[in-house]
Picture: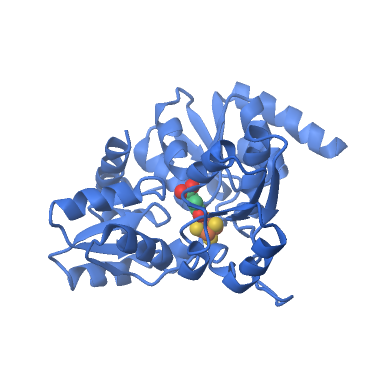
Length: 321
Ligand code: CIZ
Ligand code: SF4
């Protein structure tokens, strides 16, 4: 604890001296979210992280999250220095969607509008017509569908399947998944609902469809946080990364939040409702990034690729306004 307090104090000084601001995702550890709030940074979903970073006057952004979030920040503001606690923090959706293979998939369906989730590399974004986050993907697909567009979606198959079902849009999909949300189990969730009959079930649509089917509210992280505030229930079963409990407890104090079951019946799960890559963001790593910067921490995006990727990213920001 004493060591953590020292890290916090040194980070505060470093942020000031470097004209830097800390931008943290809801899935990072509570101490990081608290520090971002305390230092005038932001805690949010990937859409708002992108917007905050692009609009803030700081010269340096330190992005606590996973690599695609740092890359998005760099693409939107190439003149800023973008640091991350570790460049090793990736995402199973990004890893499972290599740009060359994805590009071939697109090439074989030239008539389709390419819509990709923000959880992708700069090169995959550069190949897309639109980038989306889970907070506005459904509305954008609805909009494209109304124009008669057929869609090629990537990489999350659960989110894509959910959107196709909700909108009726013609979508073909890359078969990626999130290691965290893919682990939620419907049978165990049904049992838990029986134990807590008054609880509302909140589900992120990166979860399997049989889990989404049990939800009282389905939505992005920011939408689920809003639901925890506005729904009358005093207990919630939550199927998304448990990092989100920090914000839910802060904004809906007095309510009870329970993790949705992963793995079921005592079976092992790989990530147990906490993203292993989000978990790599620690106070020591943040301090190290601000102290040493450089190769181990600084996000670099090829400028030409960045220019290409900026087009669909700006379409996302404009559409979400
Ligand atoms: O699962 C993720 O990485 C999410 C939900 C990102 C986001 O859009 O905030
Ligand atoms: Fe990727 Fe899932 Fe981790 Fe989000 S929670 S960064 S989608 S692996």
